[in-house]
Structure formats: structure tokens, C-alpha cells
Amino acid sequence: MHKKLVHTTRIAIRWGDMDAMGHVNNTVYFRYLEQARIEWLTAIGCAPDPTAEGPVIVNAHCSFNKQLKYPGEIEILTYVGPPGRSSFETIQEIRRVDSADIIYAHGGAKVVWVHFPSEKSTPLPERVRQLLSD
Image 1 (cartoon, rainbow, N blue to C red):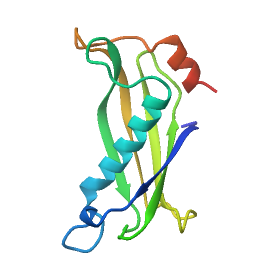
Image 2: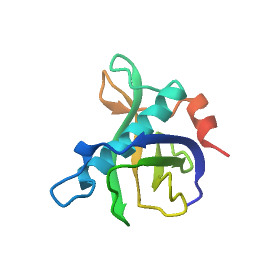
Image 3: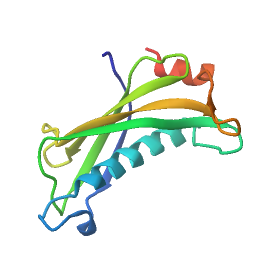
Image 4: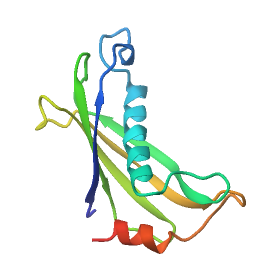
């Protein structure tokens, strides 16, 4: 799949992100991915608005390549795939800032544009489609 880099963010690994095994708990990776996705959506003026329309995810996935441990700072690169009628894929990579050549985890989510009051998908707005296209 062709992908386009749309956003980069940094997040500090917190002590409380670790589990009894001494590494970042697998559920926290999804929070990291979510935080990066929401920062990007907010930056482009697409934060969810329950009275109108906006993005929701219909699935999420993550593959864990290498353990993250405290202390440290991660960088999350967010890419998007080509837009469909009402949806697009996000693809994300998590790297430690101090070893940026290693992908510690990668994942993503399918984002569907929804009219919230009717709870139905709706075509992507043209301005969003343009942001996603090459």
C-alpha cells in the first residue's frame, strides 16, 4: 500500500506505562497510537464533534517488534493510505528517539467518516480527501 507521512509526534515513556515484566504494557502502545492520531486530526481541523460529523476508528492493530522501557522518549510517525469513499487507513511506527532507526512497534487503524447524530458513514469531505491524496 502506498502511504503518505502526515504527522510526527513525541511522547515521553512514563514510569506507569510499564507492567510487572518491566516493559511498556501492550495496551499502552494503543494509547500512544491514539494520541498521535488525535493530535494529527486536531491539527488538520478534524477533531471529533458529536453534534456533526468526523472520524471514528473501526479497527486497530499493533505489532510489537522490540520492548520499550522507561525512561525514554518515543517518536510516532503517522502515515495515511489512499482515501476511499468514506474511509482511509492510518499506518503508524513507534521508534525511540535515541534509536530512531529501529521500529519498536507498528500499527494503525481504519478511520471511517461518520455523521454522528445518525450514526452512519458519510463521504469524506473534499478538504480531507485532498489532505490524504498525493
